Amino acid sequence: MDTPNQGSPAYTHATYAHIIGWGMAVPDKVMTNDDLSAFVDTNDEWIVSRTGIRERRIASEKESTATLALKAAQRALEVADILPIELDMIIVATSTAEYVFPSTASIVQNWLGASRAGAFDMSAACSGFVYGVNMAAQAIRSRSIQTALVIGSETMSRILDWQDRSTCILFGDGAGAVVMRASTVPGGVLSSVLRSDGAGWDVLCVPSVGSRDLDGSEIQPNGHTPFRMFMDGPEVFKFATRVFNDSVSQAVSDAGLTLDDIKLIVPHQANLRIISSAARSLKMDESRFMVNLDRYGNTSAASIPIALTEAVQQGRIAENDYIVFVGFGGGLAWGSMVVKWGAPKPKEEERALLKSQRRQLSYSLATLRSRWRRWIKSINEFFARLSPARGRMARLRDRVDKL
Ligand code: UT7
Image (cartoon, rainbow, N blue to C red; front, side, top):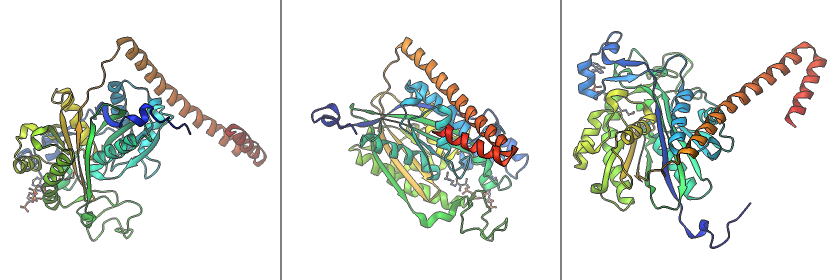
């Protein structure tokens, strides 16, 4: 392994983890509160007054957690103006992964053609994005990696009980992503506070294949159903309002700042009443909180990067601003982090165009490589079916292919 010489930049400068790219993707299909009231006993007035949500996006049959994640990632790479090959790590924070395994991150890694990146999913429910950014920042600051892609992506519509009016009205589908990169310029992720209280595991959960919570029958005595979300709303509400302020205050003081220094809080978009209550107890004007849950509902791990992307697009964050991310949800788990914003360097037109074309080429080559591998596999399977002898030949060819 190459070791930098004493006195080289790697030794003389601290490394900071900056956000240099951002992007989001939401399905086209809009479901309004009135649409919901057509099939579940609810109404627009109740939903708006109790949550602030007016509409949410719902994935089409062709969309999935991975396809939304890919689109958000491509947009973030575009803003960062880097190539997929430059990525060292891809993290997808999600509660609606494509598979139990492989990770959704590995699927995105393949589609991007990010052939130098490690990839894994992060399971921390609605706090997953904050956890993921923290993991990436740690890896960057310790210099084990240079560049990371952190995505929050969800298709919550696939795990909702559409007959349960207390949960199905809250959630929506979407994805948001950031590119993070090492820099010697002070800033980026300044502090993180990650916490969990697993005693509250059952107030918000989705039982999966390995659950000791299930006895094999469809409907469980405790109200938990495989792959369907269960939430005790009022309990989660109390938890969220309890932890929000403490964790934000802790992260801000760990960064050596006060709340007055913070330009914008980008919170998990669960319920406007939670955000308003936090604003009151932190004694901050509500205009200093980014809110877009009225249009997307609660998109779980995707809500913070989606809100961040819109905040940047609306010009609400400028270079050197201090901003806070705060997430809370299933686990129970929560997390806050302070980021000093640093805008990416301006693009050189020609170079940017060239890089854009190289990114497109990377995506096309990744698709071709994937198809090629599947094609070779099906040819080998065809030969294997012809006869045992030919099967042996095919297996031999397979081994030779792998050499
Ligand atoms: O992302 C993870 C984090 N999740 C959260 O932060 C969610 C936190 N929880 C909440 O946002 C709120 O608890 C909810 C929005 C889920 C519920 O609001 P609430 O004010 O706590 O209502 P509630 O559950 O106490 O229910 C009050 C009443 C009940 O009727 P009764 O028993 O008083 O007659 C419910 O049946 O409202 C009724 N209700 C509804 N009515 C019309 C519950 N859901 C609905 C609905 N439409 N969709």
